[in-house]
Amino acid sequence: MDFVSGLRCRECGRDYPAEALHVCDYCFGPLEVAYDYEAVAATMSRDRVASGPRSIWRYADLLPVHDPAPVDLGAGFTPLVRADRLAAELGLGELWIKDDTANPTGSFKDRVVSVALTKARQLGFKIAACASTGNLANSVAAHAARAGMESVVLIPHDLETAKITMTSVYGGRVFAVEGSYDDVNRLCAELTSEQPTWAFVNVNVRTYYAEGSKTLAFEVAEQLGWQAPDHVVVPIGSGSQLTKVAKGFDELWKVGLLDEEPHVRISGAQAAGCSPVATAFAEGTDAIRPVKPDTIAKSLAIGNPADGWYALNAIRSSGGACASVTDDEVLEGIRLLARTEGIFAETAGGVTIATLAKLAAQGVVRSDERVVALVTGHGLKTVEALTGSVGVTATIAPTLEAFDEALAETDGPIPTTAARSPR
Amino acid sequence: MSITVRVPAQLRPLTGGASEASVEGSTVGEALKALDAAHAGFAERIFDENGGLRRFVNVFLADEDVRFLEGLETPVTDGQTLSIVPAVAGG
Image 1 (tube, each protein chain N blue to C red):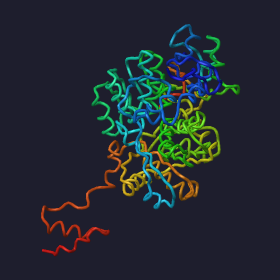
Image 2: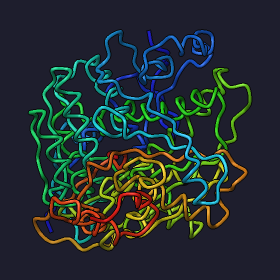
Image 3: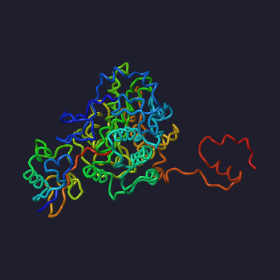
Image 4: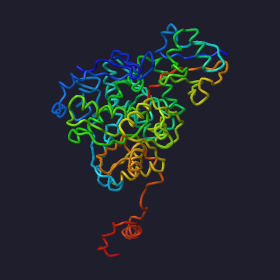
């Protein structure tokens, strides 16, 4: 049994049954899963979590579906890595990287898709679908294959090669749409009305899907010894992940798994070429003006973010900030994280790290805080972004002489093996 | 101007289940008001108290978000299609 008491409109409070509904019939506000937190608190404990699987499903009591055999490739329980070398570069103190590149298809989307398709299957759906900037496409195609479901994935036509390959290899149907992600999203929102037997994970089952992102907060707290951090930096595409991370910390407190009430500052990271939330934050307005994205951070290139307004609220009410970074800064962010911590992030991770660097330089993220940065996708997905900015040190003939000569021309401390005399 | 309006599943009870409706109007706003005149109930569902579009309602003219055009004042031409789409999707 799950602990879901129903769905509730975030705007007008109308109640709905726990079915494949994502917006309020009356005001179109987003529906949110409502839980019986008293029942969760009476059941869920640190020991119960610790004895669960090493995946998101260890937190099943706070997820919207229970299934003894969920649609699962092992999403979640990814490393939380202490990042002292990066912290030193940025002038920070205690810094951690939540390394979600380690998920089965290389991004945090496995968390939300595992939840969405487990619920979709329970609701009787046999076809999984989505609108995606790439990571979701990878994950839906893979999880659908795992579950024996058919999949229909719609993506912008100009995605990175790896993301297209990593989707189509699973054998589902993949449609490249001649337009932006916002065009794809609009098309899928319309298709949902025409194809009611398809589970569009981020449309008609989005209410359940989005809940999967709470597991990022659950894991961070558990991995810190059941303590919430002081500050979390989260990339913003639709804004859903950020709002759910905030909700996750609140829920842990609500059900009694934390000793101290969390006061987590949540800061948002966007690419300058698609920064509707950062712009609204900077202007101090409530209105999120949609934009036409132009950035290498394609996984965050959502010009009309569905949860932008809620993300903005979560940032402001937590005392966080929201900033944006240029594509050059994104690439430097990727290289900085790789160089200091050995983690290769996709462009969205570069956005997070570059924004962290910017907020640290501004004194918004402080050296007396315990900081967690969410790195949500693997660098192999977006290698072409780095073409021309990283490469081999030298191309040489297969001889010791050529190697010595080339090594001597490099910078830095490596050539301590001068003990070997020149031939 | 005769305009086709595509209606999302959530609002089809207002059109007797039809996924499209034909209306007259020379702007997006006029067309949507004509839709309410023909199928009572649309206005309170898609407009806020100030007469603007609700926060979670997107309207597309020929597949372009009217917020990138002139909003409800955007002129429409004969035979164009308007889509009403719930905004909460994606990501």
